[in-house]
Amino acid sequence: MIIGGAFGKIVDSLVNDVIMPVVGLVFGRLDFSSLFLVLGSVPPGTPETLEGLRKAGVPVLAYGSFITVAVNFLILAFIIFMMVKQINRLKRETPPPPPAAPAAAPEDIVLLREIRDSLRR
Image 1 (cartoon, one colour):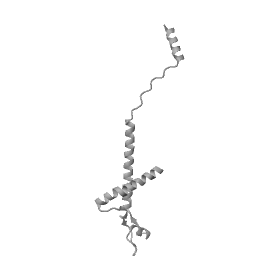
Image 2: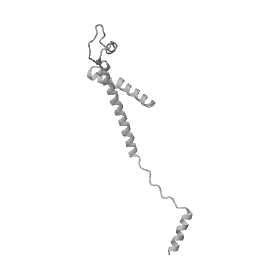
Image 3: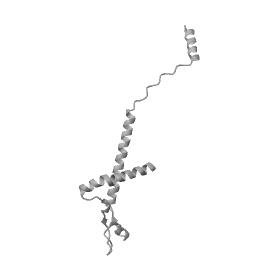
Image 4: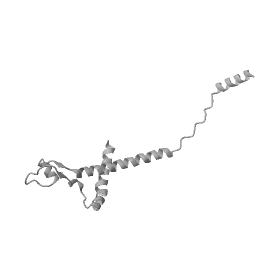
């Protein structure tokens, strides 16, 4: 659980500090969390920001936040997939241990076999 939380923070940093600036450069926008669609009427004097509309009780579809969470999830899933794939590959590459040589029979068993063989003759 602790490792998962720390790993999530690493992925958040990777997304926010490395990937999103590149996406922002390509699409001309760095922060997707400010993307939203107003679904109801806006009272006069309400700021046209996501937080302002939410505080005013206006229903909004915050698809930008969903895009950010989806990107975080996809990156996390990809990293975990690659880690599991590498671990499985390492397990396959490890040669199996050589078969153990049959253990020598105890002296009394060897002696009994010799007696049995001499009685058969």
